[in-house]
Image 1: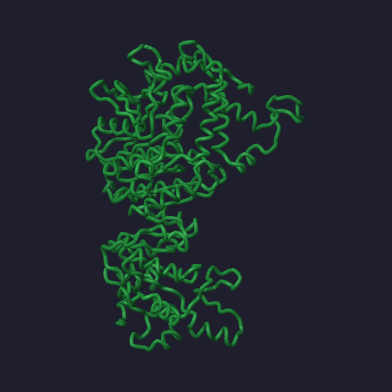
Image 2 (image 1 turned 30 degrees about the vertical axis):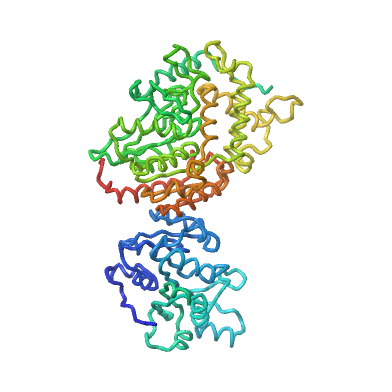
Amino acid sequence: MSVEQPSLPLNGVAPRAADRYRSDHLLLAGMIESGSRVLDVGCGDGDLLQLLETRGIDGRGIELSREGVNRCVAKGLAVVQGDADTDLANYPDDAFDYVILSQTLQATRQPKTVLEHLLRIGRRAVVSFPNFGHWKMRVQLLIGGHMPRTDNLPATWYDTPNIHFCTIKDFVQLCDEINVKMERAVALNLYGRPLRFNAPWWFWNMFGEQGVFLLSRGEEGR
Amino acid sequence: MVKVQSVSSPVQAEYRAQEADHPTSQVATFGSDHPLPLDCGIDLAPFQIAYQTYGELNTAKSNAILICHALTGDQHVANHHPVTGKPGWWVTLVGPGKPLDTSKYFIICSNVIGGCMGSTGPASINPATGKVWGLDFPVITIPDMVRAQAMLIDRLGIDTLFSVVGGSMGGMQVLQWCVAYPERVFSALPIACSTRHSAQNIAFHELGRQAVMADPDWREGRYVEQGTHPHRGLGVARMAAHITYLSDAALHRKFGRRMQDRELPTFSFDADFQVESYLRHQGSSFVERFDANSYLYLTRAMDYFDVAADHNGVLAAAFRDTHTRFCVVSFTSDWLFPTSESRATVHALNAGGARVSFAEIETDRGHDAFLLDVPEFFDIARAFLESAGKTRGLADAGQ
């Protein structure tokens, strides 16, 4: 598996303009070749799609919340109201070059099925998710004895939409299990900056606040 | 029998008859050399299309928007109606600075074939007999309406429409445009509609038609020659249909159980409740401007509409490889064309690889919401057209 450190800010986005975008979005956008067709599953307010469109990428989105969809459409983005758990099945095979699942995996009911759909619909998938193995999470559970809450995941256990948390280690295992190839993997720290690329997995799993993965279909018949 | 308050006056009947053949609109006439081939197998010729335009066509002819009207609408989108004197039916959306900006776009709306406001329909004079067509008029379909519109667009010298926009039956025409002439539609805004009419909707239409035909004044469709008009039947049809355009919540908010100009029930069948009075008014004002036979034909056209049926039952096949940009809009409280119908359209468009946006607008105003002042809907329509306009290079066009 090749692991490399992405260059930030992103090529093609002026440093000043780059301030407008979230660092994990810049990282995600850097994994996608310009001119490709992209589906962003759980696109929220469409910030990532807007960034992709500035890079000449034909982007489409699915968003669960009606407010999010309407804000996207009002920005001129091609976004439909839909549910990753139920609506991905309606998309044909190979419809997109990339399918993005940004900070959404942990909110799906069937993460494994969703992941399989991503790589059926798209030739590649880009998945980012909060790492539940981060040391702050571990400390809160171990010492505090309560479900962890962080700046990026402020919801309490009883009102969180996030029902399927996983660690970077868990995710890597799942990819292995369903024969998904990891083309690139990056762990971001609390400030959205990539961790040292040659760090071992346990280090990422402990100090990565989120994981970002570029995936492709594994070898046939393995 | 429900009493409809005001009876269609002879003056209004005269207006209606005049508008059917000599409308207060521009008219495109097509002679025997340009027949309209209908789905029923008949070539309709000669025929005419009445239409209104707003704004200016740019030199590249790239800023034309076709608006398709709904069942009881007409071409008078943004001007005063020649029969009722009321403002156009979509002045909320169409005009200078509005989402469908007449200072930017060239906007066309034509009366559908089968209508009664100047395009050839059952209320027009049949040139073969010199009498009103009535039920001799061939049954028309949504594809027939769109075919006629395409002939009008040809006549106007426009190759590709920048957008086709419409709600309800108008939305069906928008979808049909995208299926029949995908290369001629740059963007499409189908609102509160479906690719097929549901069994429940066919049932409501049948109720309306039976009400018209049960009126003794209908005279087997020959009421014009016999000097009558089935205003009671058509009024009841409109009342029933109007309920389907609203929602339980909207009716409750607007009327509740409030009484009409009285405090106690009269223990009669007068319009004690405000909602009754409102419905009777809807019925009676409708019959003044609409032809009863035309209502039969247009409801029938909607009933027959089923895009998938024309594509071996596979809806996605109808939109395969389309380059049109779509924005599908539905309303939460619309139970005539519920969101599930729009979602099915969106799934098919996605499966066909189309660039599609889909927004469901929250409102309690039911199907009629597409005609009303719903700012969230306007923002979406405006942004969708602006974004499509940028891609089309419309930034400076027509200004």
